[in-house]
Image 1 (cartoon, rainbow, N blue to C red):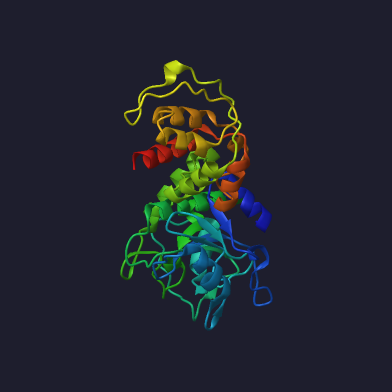
Image 2 (cartoon, rainbow, N blue to C red):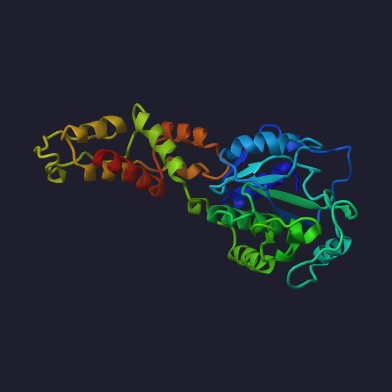
Amino acid sequence: MTATQVVLQLKKWGLKYVEIPGWATHNREGHGAWGPVNGFIWHHTGADVSDAKTYAGSTLYNGISGLPGPLCHFSIGLDGTVYLVGWGRANHAGGGDPAVLQHVINEDYTGQLHPTLGNANGVDGNAHFYGVEIQYSGSHQMAAAQYAAARRLSAAILDFHGWTEKSVIAHGEWSSDKWDPGYAPGKIMAMPAVRADVKATLDAGPLQEDDVALTDADIKKIAAAVWAADSIPAARPPVNNDDYYKADGKTLNNTTWTPGYSLQTAVEGVRKGQQAVGGVAADVAHVKAAVDALSTGGVDLDALAAKVAAAPGLTDAIAEKVAEKLAARLAE
């Protein structure tokens, strides 16, 4: 895949991703071959990471003492976000067993792979594998969001190449001196079960963008942008008096809302007893349409929030979540 093609695959498979600046041309060109690429290796970082983007853009991008970056092509944060770190040859696989490589090329093996060669005496894996660093220690299970993203990322790569799940292996299945990705100290994951899950994900087909799960932080950013928007032209008829009811012990007045209003003004009106929480939720549910053209996967959340603020509406799914947040804020 080219860098452009991998981005298209991430979008196709509904993966939320962040591009580390310069990733598309950041590689170890001149220090060994790149290709033919035959498979995909899962790694763990060996440490739990609190700031996924900073870690991806520093340690994984630049490398460590004695091992220049990039140290992977992809990295997956705790919330399942995929970070694009480098493209081309990367220092991630190191030396490994040529018999394993042949099995991956042929996709002719069963069960767990058990390499007999490692980093010091194996063949160059950096030429033949894409690599993902999953940001967790390996001494416990990865987060559910990370595992889901790793499966979808694997499916995106397999889909492009026409490979099966047998082209996805663990670093510990490639190199005899590795045990990643782990689930307990020194314990590699059962990769036949992982491959079965990857196969199920691949067989289910690409996720639609509407299926991408938004985290609480995502919703807060989007809601904050909508909250601060000066005016949102909602295609909605004026509210009738029949829609009004008592809120905060006050009888609501006869104010009628018309298309084109500040959501912040509307919510402040609720606080003052001018409209009920249910009315706000109903109005937010009608402020929709523009985000249909936006991708929740592959768009920086700050940029997405700004686009939402400037857009003439929201999709139903996001509108419902924003409404929930606003209702919760009113209840505080």
